[in-house]
Amino acid sequence: MEIDIKSAHGLIPAIIQDSETKNVLMLGYMNEESLQKTIETQKVTFFSRSKQRLWTKGEESGNFLNLVSIKNDCDGDTLLIQAKPVGPTCHTGADTCWQEPNDANYGFISQLENTIKTRRENADSEQSYVASLFAKGINKIAQKVGEEAVEVVIEAKDDNDDLFLSESADLLFHYLILLQAKGYQLNDVVEVLKKRQK
Image (cartoon, rainbow, N blue to C red; front, side, top):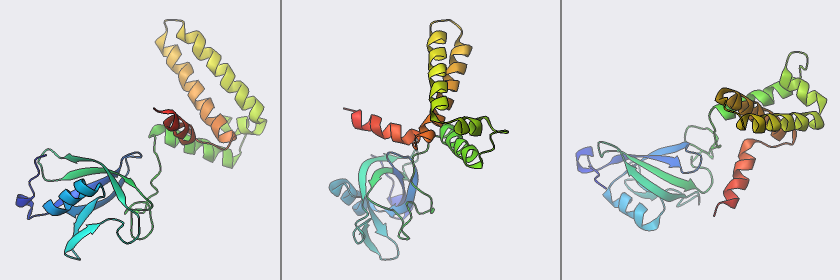
């Protein structure tokens, strides 16, 4: 790995990213010695500018950052370090140094889950299709998932890709509603899948 520490006055920025959630946890600075220690110990170690010494994240709190990978940027003057955090990363007790939760985020799907949650909480079954489904109960929601699944199977056997994708979207949407009706979210299913990975 070609890293240009000398031209960066002996320190380079190291962006720390959770290897699973992909959230940025913090930014620190490394010199050659701290980078070497990180590689040897598999615990992310920085050069503390305030303490003027090597500092392994978690050396006092126990909230270590276990090394997964180190990548170099295109100019060789910034590191992207993927790690598995043991506990919160920020000294304030927050998950990240931006005071954000380190939750898994599935982009638009996570936004859709939040919309479903909001519509359920508002419970305006006359104005909201989602709220009306929750008002009808788990049996109706499960029935809708079954209907949409059958429609996906039917469209899979035909040649109309637009209909297949449309029915797939309907199935996923209703499945997300069913998950919340049972008190779960997509991430709970993802965790089950991770446990099955061999």
